[in-house]
Length: 278
Image (cartoon, rainbow, N blue to C red):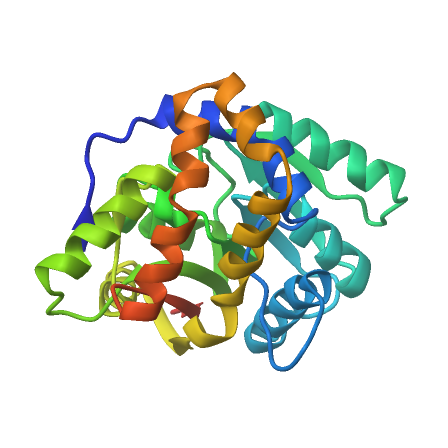
């Protein structure tokens, strides 16, 4: 695991409160990577990533889902609209919570997801109250990942599933250059740590899950950052970031670091589906 312990939770919250506009301008309603098989548009690639994870997790119609790190509600809305899921989304950002709530209401989504502004590491849900815990690119921001997976297992009914996509540290051993590149990503993207694929598999198993599917989509998703870099260069978003403060400039300046980390094997992009052992 690569650690960057100087990250602070309040900085993460402030980042998403202010940078939601950046994400929307640069990337759209889904705050996550796209998945490319051919020449899909970025919007289609983002939906394709969501669809693939839902299929892999075999989410049934009408499932009760906790979307941890729901962002602007893109996945929550998709799960409700396409699969009739009863979704509760959790985000650290009050701006994202409000944005997601309005988006679901204005689109007339039924059953309408509900969104909470809360800390994923502290929130409490009733035991065995969910069929699925769903999380796309959120666990990177968690400070005690093993504890979170233990807590999430309590929320699920026996046989319930956790569907996860995550930025990962590359396979050990990393070179010194790869390690420093990954630490640069942690700094720019406000991640206190990045676990490897084997770290995540171990955390799931220690928490009482059985990992039934796992793998890497790095080559399929890295185009995300190529597109974002081009959009930054063509837009005035960098000037807006300078007005808003150093952290937002730092965020944009590390897009190239993520792309380089993927290309060099310093980072990977992984998927997991884990089932709670009865």
